[in-house]
Image (tube, rainbow, N blue to C red):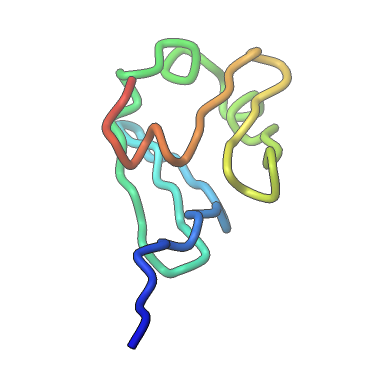
Length: 81
């Protein structure tokens, strides 16, 4: 029997912010909680600037055009900041 070790590519469904965290909901139901202090441009941004985000590569990344900030989901899952 053949089996594959290929994991599906994690993709973003939605993001939210609290005072201390960026929370990324993935299409598979996982939620990643990231300290917002890891990303000073997001930590110092206004609510309006944080709310202005778009998905990159069908959800493989997140881009904030006003802040010139890009985050990859793979990097977030690895704890890269």
